Length: 197
Length: 156
Image (cartoon, rainbow over all chains, first blue to last red; front, side, top):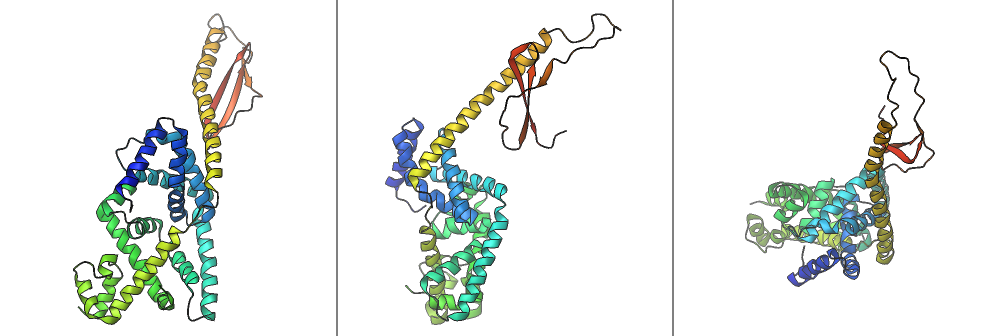
């Protein structure tokens, strides 16, 4: 994660105090991580409602299991794994794949309708199309692409977070880039023309 | 390197290569080719759009409400788990009760024996954990003991 050392130290200090039973530190920690947890959950589930549910579940786990964090890995790595596990369990419960497919098909229909009517895409619509294409990636590629190219984690760090070798991370990253960029260039050439600074 | 080869590599190149910040075959080509450089810039722009989009995703539940809800749920789970810890003790007490009640068979070998049922399904309502089912038994003559049996759903 692109964070400076003081920020990391601040988080680790909060974790230590929260583990010692300091409820104010726990609240501060949650406030600090809340958006990040949601983002990870969103990437994992691809659905805002599911992401909300998963985030809630992660907070419950944090409440109960924070003491099991030993400090051997970065707190963010540990938290990512907690979020990932919660998302997997949630996915099993609600049949996430079916919902995701339904949502993706809805968006792609809306997208093609809109593309017929305009030649230059506005920024908001471009963002929606890129996001939809991203959501269409397989989950492993989605999480690797997000962690590496969008959040700046190194392949070895991602490997530790996801329990895979760095070389596998790189392979998934290449596949994700190829799929995403290929889709943008082939299916939405107007999109890259329409993007503005 | 020609343009088709470079465009193939652009699909997998990292941001540093696309922006010519590191020395590589792709970067070398981009520095010499305007159209491929423009394409690389667009790819970077699309990626930047996605990064902004994801950085902007916001939870629908306000953090205060989420914190409060999580605190309540965590406390409920703790209570539930502390209750589970008592189950093995209750089960052991039930078995002990069965043994102590001395209703295990006839006094003499070969003697016919009609033992009266010493357990019955209880009316106590116990919530089973996810994926499990539960049966609660009362033990006759021992109102202080119940046996709680959790089993996987679908077991015979």
